[in-house]
Length: 577
Image 1 (cartoon, rainbow, N blue to C red):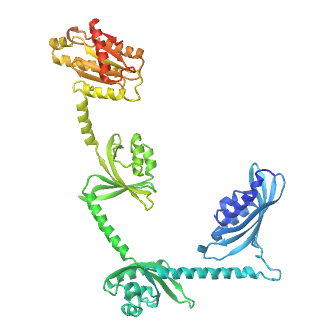
Image 2: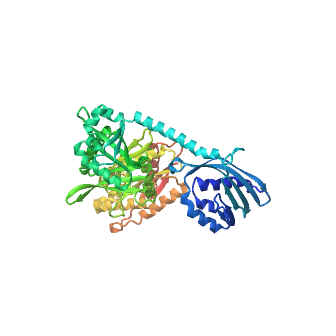
Image 3: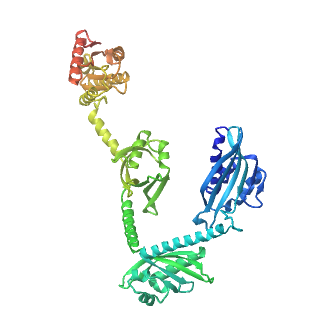
């Protein structure tokens, strides 16, 4: 027998399970071959084609109750190269919620073939034998009494449950007739007890009816609840108040169901539960929600709630309706998937936002969000939130505030930029450039293939004295643009005073640094000044090494190299050796 056919018993069990437990007819049909035959437990269940079986199964699938399978055994009893026979036996038992009581033993026979690498059923035979007949029995008495014994056992279990509920709930039981006042035919001891009455006192107070027990202002709604519920079916529920013996009012939940007694008369059996504490909490929550609503109406920030399990974000935004400020809820489902699209939050900020929303990052963050109006610019948003946990300390919800800080951030960046930049050239100033270079030299990114260039405009005083400071300023700006043009964003370019500049070039070979230096000298010679005055530069270069890890040492070496360039006639560069 092939390895595949060894799986035949499992296939037989899977088909029985799919049919009875999962009630998945499609799953059963996909394992039947085209010329399959089937004999079922019913007298008429003799089918000889796939289509007959399919139609019959679909037609009767709603009649299959929810079942359990127990005591199942499936085994191969005969086989050849491409087929085998599987016999099985099992017990089918309906579940309690099916309103059907059945426990029956079944036997089955499966002829299973191997067809192009797949197991298919060629023939099935399902039967309901008499269950465990005794030798001296003419009719299977044991299986006949089995359902009765099961009913007795079930009745005993249900009775014990009802007694437990009656003794432990903070409420009571009542039975009412289906008349105008819902007069009582039964009241247990628990109901008068929770209200502070004796049985006789309660019957006198209520006039022996459910209508008489209800606090009069609540009676119209209670009757309306009953009428509405009974119009839909036999069950009902209503919340109302009952006057206790001490004069206070108790909120109760009254729920029950109509049913016919053995004489065919409609009776209503109900449970009364004390919900006073819940109603007090509900009232407090309503008041708190109103405070929350008023607070939201008076702030400009956007409040939000994020449901972690359901991945749903709700924003509460102020809108003007009829010249009044109201709150509207905007709900977004599958929020994480929307974030990952990059359409609303900058890709670089998605990760930290998700960390905050899921309670993994407990800090205030700033993210970039697409402007909902223009769709073509980013707005800076500050996210402040708190996480709510369940009883097992698992995060379940995040509540927070979204504040647009774009203008504030722009003003701050402008102030920072003013403090860091030379106002004329917009290059870094001396202090900032020194700090940035020192920070880099102390980091692991520094690999001894960097260089500091100190640059001086030759005879710049002549330009100022001859052509004026405005012309001199234009020369400074032109030189600045040349320095930026020949360097990368990662490099640090600064004006450190007067006509002196520095460039810190990162991670380049000495040959490339020399090439950049020559390009700068060449570009500077093309600067146009009045009367064809030539602009030249003198440059000193110091390369980093293991002994040069301080800015002051590196600058000192580059500055010495600069003086060598001046001594060599200017318009050239020198390196510190």
